[in-house]
Amino acid sequence: MWNKSLCVLLLGLSGSVWGGPNDAVVSHVWVGESIPGQNSATLELNITTVTPAKLISVSTEAADRVEIHRVFQNRGKMNAQVVDSLPLPAHRTTAFGSHKLFLMLVGLKRELNIDDQIAVSLEIEYANQRKQTISVEATVKKMALSYKHLGSAEIHDHR
Image (cartoon, rainbow, N blue to C red):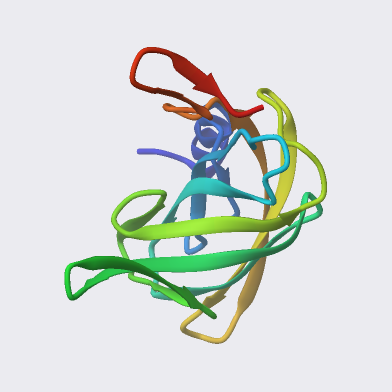
């Protein structure tokens, strides 16, 4: 049988943040490096909930605002829609950065360099109207394709 202290210790070692048995767990938090002169970046993370909840806001001092984006296809084109909040179903993990959900840091206040740490706050509201603020640290990681891409015969670096 797992006890609460052991669960908290294991979650702490795994880089997750957890408040209690009915609270959300936030894990795998990272941000993509920014391109010099770029004013936005993608924040990726997972939120696992035990009870029904809703993500009502995300914020960081590294950007003017954080937008919740839902991507959908309309007439063969991919479109992004900014939503004010996002339902978080019970007993599910919602992954931002895949499955057509993204968190965008908009209005970056500085360049985000690999291995920087960015403080992020998430506000979650549960079905019983209780609100919780979860604070996490996002590590800035190198993007898979980064800002370098292959051209016809050379690599272009847009720095």
